[in-house]
Length: 203
Image (cartoon, rainbow, N blue to C red):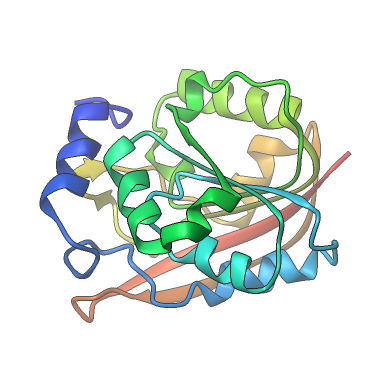
């Protein structure tokens, strides 16, 4: 099965609650710290790639960020986020799309991706992603994936592990690596997943 199979992800979000999927975070502190480190104003255009029903958008709205877009392959995931946010959801732009087919003229000050990029396992998918990021990022890019010490699968699908060097190599022609570090994510099942996060700046 392709890791960008829409039916798979629709089924996941249709049948599982946040406490039943490994990626859930009550507070996405690492992502928030990286976003804050960009030192941009509250009017910065931020897109969360593969944001699903992540709580990141909640915290960004509470902090006063005004231009937030959440993109996910699953319409069900975004529906869940909208219901959770209530009237606040109207302040967010929601996009249902496979990131490897995302086509927009919009550009973003911060491109954030926690655990979407590592689902792209073919050179063709990765090249499409990097090309789209090159076109649509005008500021910073933050990417978090499973590290070389992390899982080899997620949601029953194989993923691509990264370390600081291999992640930077994929973007080095268009982005300058600023900082990378690894962090342990404790899942709702009390298991540990090791992530590597990197922040890049568009050259």
